[in-house]
Amino acid sequence: MIGNSEELDGVQRATSAVLTSRHGTYLGASFLSELDRAATEEGALASWLKKHPAMNEFSANHEFFKPLMLTVGKVIRHTATWHKLGLSIGAALMSMIDVATDVYTISIYRSGGFHETADLMTLLVLLSLALQLAMVAAVHHRKKRKMMIEMFGTVTFTKPAFNKFRVLTNAKVESHAIMPPVSEMMMFKMCEVFSESIPMSVIQVVNVLEIEELDLLVVGALLTSVVFVAEAVSYMTYMKDISEVSR
Amino acid sequence: MPLHGLKLVVVKWSMYLLSFCQLLGKSLEMAILVQVGGKSLAIGVLECEMVAYLLYKVVRGDFRYWVPMPRGTSLALSLIERVAVKVICDFTGFLHARHPYEMGGFYWLMNMVWTQASVFGAIKLKEEFGRGVEGEEVGERVVKEEYYLTIATVLLLLWFVALLGLMFGSEEELRKTFYSMMSAEQYTKALFDSGEDEIMAEIFDDHPSYYASFEDEIKEWLGEKWNDWHASRPGWLTEELIERIPVRLLPGGEDVNVLEEMDEEAKEKLTSNESRRNSSIEQLQRVSTKHYFE
Image (tube, rainbow over all chains, first blue to last red; front, top):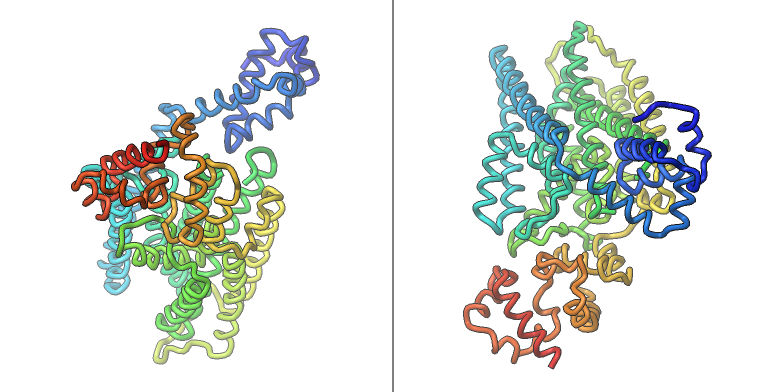
C-alpha cells in the first residue's frame, strides 16, 4: 500500500486515461484488500469496480479485463499459503482441544459420582467418532488405501486440517471420491455437531436451569459452546454457499 | 449469499444470530420438558417431530439422499442423513438445510417457526403441570421459572431479527429458497431443464433414481451432444464426470452388439457394482463412440 497523497486520493474520481503507474500500485493493493473482505473473486471485483469508476469504465470498454481480473483473483484466493496452512492446523488443534476438554469434563463428572452423565457423554464422543469414520468410508470407499489414510486422520483428529486446507485451496474432487471437498468438510463437521456438540449443549442448559448457586464458569461455558456451535454451523453454510460448485 | 458489501456482513451475522437463538431456544425447550416429564418426555417429543419429518419426506417421494451410494447402502445412508440434518436443523437452524436435497425451504422455515413456538408450549406445560417427576426436592434456583418466558421472548425477538436480516440481506432472486416447496427430484429436473450442458451434466452427481423419470430425455440429449463433446472436449467434461454417467444412457449403451464387442472381463465389471470403473467404461466408450459415428 502506498501513501495517501492527494494524487492518489483522486483515483476514485479519475478516468482510466489519466491514471499513472502509482495509481496502478494503489489499485492493485485495493483489489487485494477487496479479495480479503469479499466472499469470492466475483464479489471482490464487483466491489472494486464500484469503488473505482476509472476501472469500471476500463472494464466496460475492454471485455478482456473482467475475465483477467477474475482469473487473477481466483488464483490469489486459492493459492496455498502459510496463512492457510496455519488456519488448517488451527482447525485440527481446535478439534483436539475439543476432545481433550470433553475427556476432562467426563472425568470430572465421573469423579464427582455423576456416572450416568459421564457415561452418556462418553457415548456421545464415541458416536461422533464412529459417524465420522462411517462418513469417511462412504466418501472414499472406491479407493481403499486413501480410505485408510483418511480414517487414520479421523482417529488422530488431524482430518479437520486436511479438510479445511482442501477447501481453502479449492482442491478438485478426486476421481474416487463421491463428493467435493467442501461437501466432505461439511458432512464431517455435521457428524460432530449432531452427535456431540448439540447433545452437550442440551446437557449444559439442563444443568444451568437446575443450579441453585450462580456459577459464572458454568454459564460462561454454556454460552461459549453455543457460540462455537453457531459459528461452526454458519461457517459450514457460508463455505458451501460461496463454493464454486454450489454457486 | 451476497458476495460483497454490507449485505454480506448482514447475512453472515444474521446466520450466527439465528443459530445462536435456535440452539438456546431448542435446548431451553428440552430442558423444560425434562423438568416437566423427565428425559422420556423430551425424547418422545423429538421422536414425534422426527417421525413427522420422515413421513413428510416419504409421502413426497423425497426420502432418498442424493449421494450415489452402492446398492443396499443408499437407503441406510439416507435414513442416517435425514435424521442427522433434522436434529441439526432443529437445534441450529442450519441454513443449508433449506436446499431441496436436504429439508427443503418450506419445511426448513416451518421447522424453525415450530421450534420457536414449542419453547412457549413447553413453558405453558411447565406452568400447567409443574415438575412431573415425583419425589424430587427443588430448591431455590438461579434461573427462576418466571424468567423462562422473558428468556424465550428475547430469543424469539432476536431470532425474528436474524430471519429478517437473512431474508432482506440475501440475493433477491434466491429469496424464494427460504420457502420453496421444491423436492430433490424436481431440483434435478430443473438442472436438466436449464439448457446449459455444464449444468445439465450435474445431474450425474446425484443418485440415479433422481433422474430415472426422464432418462429418455437424457439419452436424447447425450445422443445429440456426445459427438460434439468428443471433438471439442469442453473443460467441464472430466474423466470423473464421464465415469459417473451410467453406461445405459450413453449412445449405443444398450446396443447388444456393442456389449458383445466387449471382452468378458469388461462385461463382468459392467454388470457388477464396479461397472463404472475406468477400464470397462473406456472400453465401452471407445466401442460405443465407434458405433455411433459409423
